[in-house]
Amino acid sequence: MESTLDIFVKAIFSENMIFAYFLGMCSYLAVSKTVKTAVGLGAAVIFVLVVTVPVNYLLENYMLKEGALAWLDPSLADLDLSFLAFIMFIAVVASIVQLVEMLVEKFAPALYGALGIFLPLIAVNCSILGGALFMQDRQYSTILDATAFSLGSGIGWFIAIVAIAAIREKIRYSHVPAPLRGLGITFIITGLMGIAFMSFSGIKYGKEVKEDKVAVVVTGMNTNTVNK
Amino acid sequence: MSETAKTKAPMEPLFSKKNRKLVTDPLTDNNPVTIQVLGICSALAITVQVEQGVVMGAAVLFVLVLGNLIISLMRNLIPSRIRIIVQLVVVAALVIIVNQVLMAFLPDVSEKLSVFVGLIITNCIIMGRFEAFAMANKPWPSVMDGLGNALGYAGLLILVAVFRELFGSGSLYGFPIFGSPIPTPDSPLGTGLYAMGYMNNNMMILPPMALVIVGVIIWVQRSRNKDLVESH
Image (cartoon, rainbow over all chains, first blue to last red; front, side):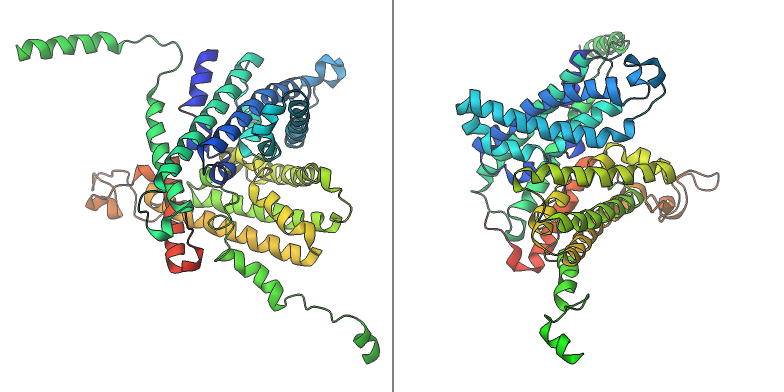
């Protein structure tokens, strides 16, 4: 059984939105030319993910899932509306993005100045809808888990876009073969970063009794004695 | 008869040079994935096997051609402030159809594609073509544009999938190419190339290699056509 913390860490590292699932690649490639804009877009993605995934979680569990409408009336218990999930999720994402844009503009003009141009882009960012669909696919048991997952995915996406933007700023000064410049080298660097991130898949999640530990200690002692 | 034909604007033939260009351009020098940088989001994760690539390509073809047609027919009715939501609703409706068909007729492929069918909705290629073409053009050219871009997308998907499946699993579309790696009593290493010590490159199955392969395809394409080279 995974704890909430496991879900959070897993979403950042070993199941990173960019490096493991390629979600949100379009804006990742388009808006990663400078670190400053990358930070803006990354922050906006975290924000929107944390708002939309819990809303979609409630929608999924109290409206769309098979038997989810039973709280309304017992006769609706065998109703399965899950085929409507796509249209509901995207409608929620698009309208929340619009709402967030208006609220931020009204109450935090400074933040709006920083995020403003990115917010409309986010409605069609795959990682937002992807977050909702993974949440549906993985059947998180509580809304807290779903929120932890969305926060983790957002932070993972943020780390990825800021890292690639920093690398792209520096790579301008190196001699990349002409046909590979720009898009080509960005793809290959992202691939290499993905390989680096795969090393996080060795993290052990969940509460398992570590039996190996004793064996390691014993072998360690053996090598010590042999060395002496 | 001839007089009425004169007064009317000359009707463009359905497959005029301009319309053909709409289909052929995205296949090479204006490829949606490698040049326009659209639709990478859901493309790369499903190129482990050719079969998934073909199914995904067909799904995008259906959605893009019909979506372009619908948006193009409605282009004068959509208020520009809410056009994104209208476009999303059209795409979502089409993707629901695709998903239901896949679940009914190809359940195992549908299982493997999992969330990536739903992600066709936010596939940038679809919104990108709606915005850039269908909102400003007549229905028939929009259909051709959708066809061309979807084929360019599917072509790239299948190309990447061929490399990954051939070198990663030693098969194409599920058929073994290099023999079988399963040991038999006669040859402990398997049959075919495997008997000579060949091994599959498991790296190819991992997600990052899809990016590297696309990077190399971009490299080859741009070194053949110098006009496409970016300054930085």
